Length: 191
Ligand SMILES: Cc1cc2nc3c(=O)[nH]c(=O)nc-3n(C[C@H](O)[C@H](O)[C@H](O)COP(=O)(O)O)c2cc1C
Image (cartoon, rainbow, N blue to C red; front, side, top):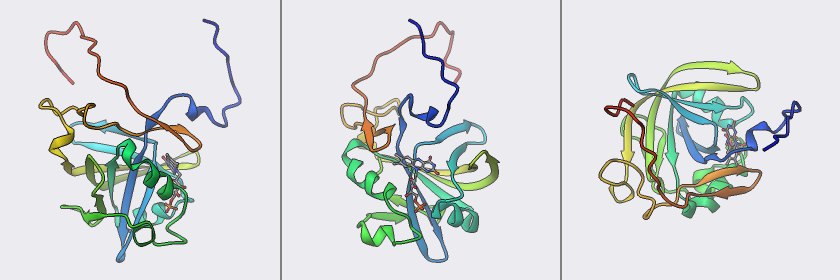
């Protein structure tokens, strides 16, 4: 297959889907939520999760003020809400009130855990680094919340029960179709 080589990289990030999460923050009595597709685990021990947030976002201000956030992993059922949360800024409206977002405060942080999330990480910021036009916030995961009905006995997502929401770019989303196993030729599972 002959690949297209592209050096104009304005929208390089749309070539493969990424999980569309909702990151929440809480500062000075104010809750906010935003959609985040740029996120990843970067360490197991200590458990650290990275979210990449533009300084333009209201979330960025609340993150700097509070040093806490949650990452909420959502299903396709929450697609309309994800779109609504992404389509406005906490600088203009109280998203929790106006969009009717149902949530509870985290167990270890004040930032909210959404009722609609199948799993959520509660994080405390341990680092903030600027890369290009975004800031990477590194959060130590201090608690994980998860819905037992959404997970199999080996702690992986039960894809018969849940269709995770993946972001394709612009206003487009997709999900998974099922599970296949690709065994590694390893004596024991190491990761
Ligand atoms: C699916 C999706 C994923 C997004 N991912 C990110 C992201 O990773 N980082 C970011 O800074 N903005 C991202 N955005 C844009 C913000 O979600 C959007 O600007 C949001 O309204 C910001 O809200 P706030 O100003 O209340 O923080 C994404 C938008 C969508 C639709």
